[in-house]
Each structure stands twice: as structure tokens, then as C-alpha cells.
Length: 164
Image 1: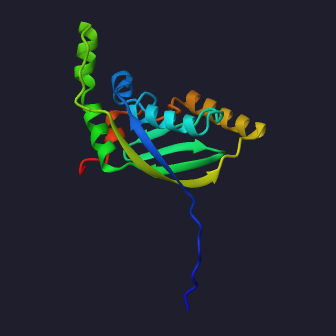
Image 2: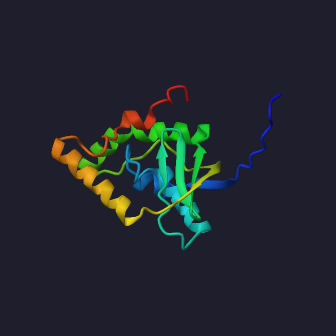
Image 3: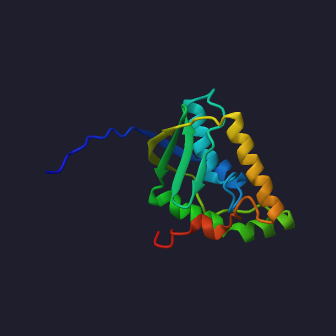
């Protein structure tokens, strides 16, 4: 006989407004300057003004962020996925316009969307011993000639979004 489990999953709904300033000041292909990241961070600051760094990451079709001491994860709807691909395709024309001193007009228009983020595990800070252990391992990797962090590129960012 099979046993049935009941599991409670907490979610939070966010309505994200991507405004023209986010599109104009955003950087293509960068997680930290993405138009969606800036818009989501603004919405989280509105909800939690004294929350510190929410560490928003928009990667491919998933959004991850921290809120109220927990990690959250949400899947992007189709509209922001399409706009993300269009935004990242405009990298070279943006660079050319910036080099010439011209203003660049993006094809991406201001938009809004709603995401449902699922609450994950609690954020537990590292102990001093664990941080020392991590730092020693990083130094060993650097001495061995292996880079500590993988290179992040545009292919990784939009990988898996070809069907959008």
C-alpha cells in the first residue's frame, strides 16, 4: 500500500513593472545589470525596505532571490523571456551607439508581468571555521591554476530559451 504525504509549499506573488529607465540603463548579458533584475529588486525593496541585499539573479528562465531570511525561486513567464532574448541581442548595436555617442532606441518596450516564487530553504550564515576552510580551498585552486569561478557568457544566459 502506498503512503500519501501532504507537503505545504509557500509561495509569494510579485507583480514586476519593467520601466523605460530599466531598459535604457540596463546592460546586455550581465546578471547584475539586467533590466529584469533591476525591476525585481525595486519591487522587493518596496515590499521589504530594510531587507538589505536581496541578491536577485535572473538566469535563463529562472529568477532567484532572498527575502525575509529565505531563498525564493520563480519561473519567468513567456513575455519576459522574449524580452530578455531581444534585450541581449541588442548588445552590439548598443555598444556601437555608445561608442559613437548616439542614443540607442531599444525594441523592448516597458512591460509588466507576474511571478509566483516558491519559498526554499532558510539562509544560514557560514561559521568562521567553514569560511576559513572555503578560503583555503580557493587559494589551493588558484595556486593549481584552476579558476575559482566559471566564465559567464551570453550562451549560458539564454540557454534553453530557443523554443520561446
